[in-house]
Image (cartoon, rainbow, N blue to C red; front, side, top):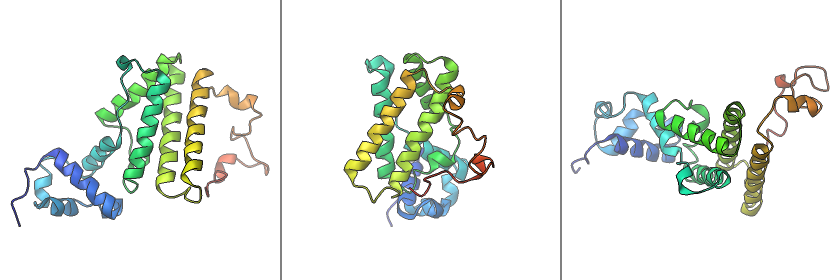
Length: 215
């Protein structure tokens, strides 16, 4: 076997991504990454502190950059471009993409991207509190749709239908932002249908599975 390439953190992360793409997250082990690179397992720890550190690095690799405000793009264009990039990433790395829903946004890059989305929402006119809440809801909606699509949840629908669904999601996000962002009081104004106050049987709605969870 030839001499292994110079080891670096980016090389370790790239190898981990390749292993997870091929074998899923369950098959992503430090020995498997080391074997792919042709090095000992201990050699990896000069570049990643732990398995958790490696998983956080994969999260960072999955996160697309937010187009800068200085580029002249509107907040709609910036958020739309990021949403499309997230969907593309999910399609390229379906086995790894669920990490975005499983790991906290704890790394510096993840926080930078989150703060960038909040800044785009502030650019749209949202106050700080509603902008932060909107970021959480928008990120979860976009990542959740992309993860479901990548996992094959919507495979019974052709690509045209899925593209229309995604466009509808972006339209809903735009409408949410243009009306001032999410407001908890809107739940009671809508009759409390999603307030968790109770369902048809009088029990807490949150105790039951979400409707339509089967896709």
